[in-house]
View (cartoon, rainbow, N blue to C red):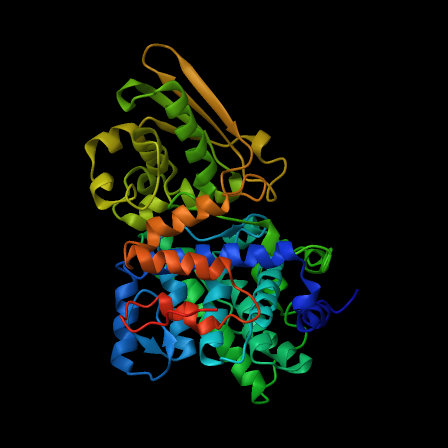
Length: 468
């Protein structure tokens, strides 16, 4: 068998802009705009404030933007803050097969480093991002999400740090042996516990920020000569054997270079766990098509993928009685109730007011969670759901959602993505500034001064106006 770690790193090190077709380049812009929107909105999250205060109190000097604020700091701290903020609103991208949110890790790494190293151009930025997505997502597939979750790990954190190390290594122009060491070092930084599910606390939101910060640290250490194991993925005590009961090592190199995983990554339209997106799509469609009113509902049946069951269906009491936003974002009954009530499930629906609402609670109690082998057939490539709504008058309506909105097979258009960005970013920045960010990202090219775009995401009044 080929040495997995070395083969993967050889490919990533050699990847450059000329290897990417226009689709991959445009997809990177698309994902970048989505990332910036969730990071800007996430800067307002309650969980983001302690991180921002910590950075202010440490007085870490630097010129990297903490998105959505007027703060500038080092790339490591910017990556930490931006990654945590971007993950806090549960609207960040998802790679289905790996059950991982790659963008919040990879873009947090790339944005921070490209801001402090102005010589990094658009082509280098895109190739570093695409390479990071390749590594993080392929590892997510290889550990098999179901078995990774069973051990209590969050793949965005554990697999993400390897992708961040590769992205950082490319942007810092490490040679191939140094990049290999950076990934080996990252193996000792692969952490991320699911215990936040026990009480709805904030550590999940911290995971992508830590992965991005540690990826930069790993690359910087390798650049100075620190050595890491060259078999960190496939070794006897390596990542695959330690983080999954049934790893699939062959998935890491399968079709490498034939297609890019960023093209297989989805966008979230709803502000909750990706495992709840298909049920919400189905229930919104039924509510609108059949003019279903909450008081008419007798019973709601929702089929949930087995891999996500422990995340969004258990423990039962917490899913039916959420006490905070994190609980609600990981509760199928809550997502179903707001979908039928409001016919949308954005940030404003996952609110404290709705969590405390007696009407929402009544509807939640009518939700029946089910396992259904029919939706498991093509998992993890497809994340479908069946939903069925019974009315008090004896009528019932059902819906099968094969590809949730935002999947590559059912994508948001650029205009729809721009609308999502505006709905998030205008919570923090003026509409004119948000329009400028959208134009700047869409028009990115070889002459673009990247850091001028990142400065537009700052709350500071003194921002660049000329991007290209």
